[in-house]
Amino acid sequence: MTGDELDDEIAALLQRADQRYTKGRRALVAALRAAGQPVTILQILDAADGLAQSSVYRNLAALEEAGVVTRVITNDEFARYELAERLTEHHHHLICSMCGDVFDFSLGARTEASLDKALHRVADDAGFTVEAHRLDLVGTCPRCD
Image (tube, rainbow, N blue to C red; front, side, top):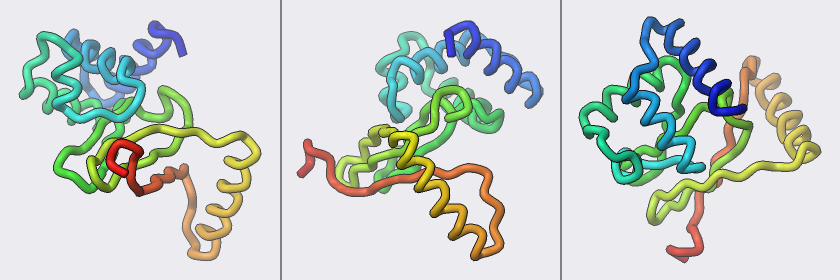
């Protein structure tokens, strides 16, 4: 998705949530897009000059509610944030249980299809209707190993 297409999609999502795509939200989205992986609020503040911490908290909450941003929960005290999959591409996460860093990874089409099929079987057995899936692998990153 190009930058303009992304902005148009985000503006539409925010409009459906009775929100506006403000200058601060655009700067926040730009920081998330540039990061290329889930980041903490502190990392966002370091990357995006001029954003106030209170504004980042408020805007992340609004963007998450509108479906623009996804919060990735780790085992440390800081959640990570990224653009929602609907705006980027389907992927999964490697989560370090020591430092809490989160790294994105993708599977090949054949592996993804097999995983999806297996997950749907599990859901069907439980009478559960699947909308999407997320896979988080928790372990230790090379830096902490």
